[in-house]
Amino acid sequence: MAEMNERQDKPGTGRWMRVLLVVSLAVNLAVVGVVAGWALRHGGHHGHHPSRLDRSGGPLTRALSEEDRRDVGQRMREVWRETGGRRAGMRESFDALVADLRAVPFDPARVAERMREQRQGFAARFEMGQEVLIEHLSDMSDAKRAAYADRLEAQIEAYRAKREHDRTD
Image (spheres, helix red, strand yellow):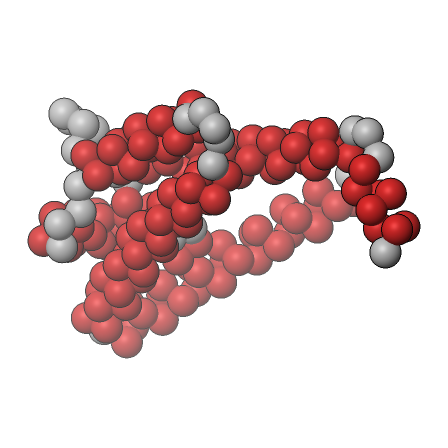
């Protein structure tokens, strides 16, 4: 027991833990910032620039024809509005996160909770997109769905080839 107390009483141990926590928080904020920046920039109509929600599914949506991507994107925006999706909520959440980061004393549990809530929001939006895509795929003819599968397979093969190429460089 005395040995454990000695380790806890060493000078600088608390400082390193605090530094590690701050670095971990910074990395998490960077990830959330990138995702949020993308979502705020592409998450709704911006004058003449329509949302690119229809591209958020990676190869699954890139394999769609341009017309199908437009249809899926339009439907995603409709569902987003119908289910109460709003950019203002995201902005409010990030404003609150910034306030939490400035709070003294700093409450890492509160910041972690705020980030968890934001991840849940992004996950719900992603799930909504998948549901819209599945609905769209269900409405396709067998021939169109087979052509989509061929394009998807090509997307996946191109990705794998690029990864393999990058590994050998």
